[in-house]
Length: 124
Image 1 (cartoon, rainbow, N blue to C red):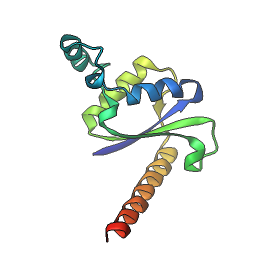
Image 2: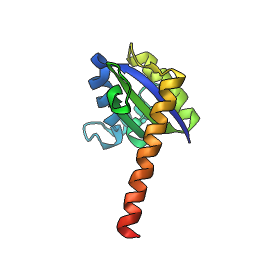
Image 3: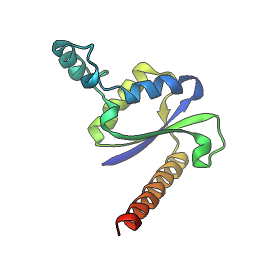
Image 4: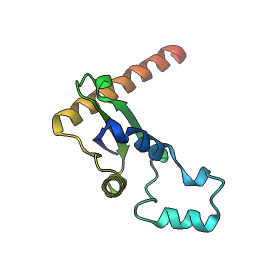
């Protein structure tokens, strides 16, 4: 799996969060034909709810900024298609600069490690 981090303006963060959580397979208002169309579309077929992601304010990662960072862990094909969707659906969602990306990825990995250690202590 590859990891990438994207930056998003606060003004688009709520719309981004809605898109991330949405899974058309769980939407009972969509019929089977429309579901197939969505899954085969290069924009709407990118379903984030099935990937590992984390959307947080920059301050949560110790970065002083008024933006949100989106961390995604997925295969390269998915990430490349996700970038196309971001460009199509959002004005502000762009790949984070290398320094911010490294900081966010390090923070997420550290947090996961602490979580895994906690689970190990419980069941240890």
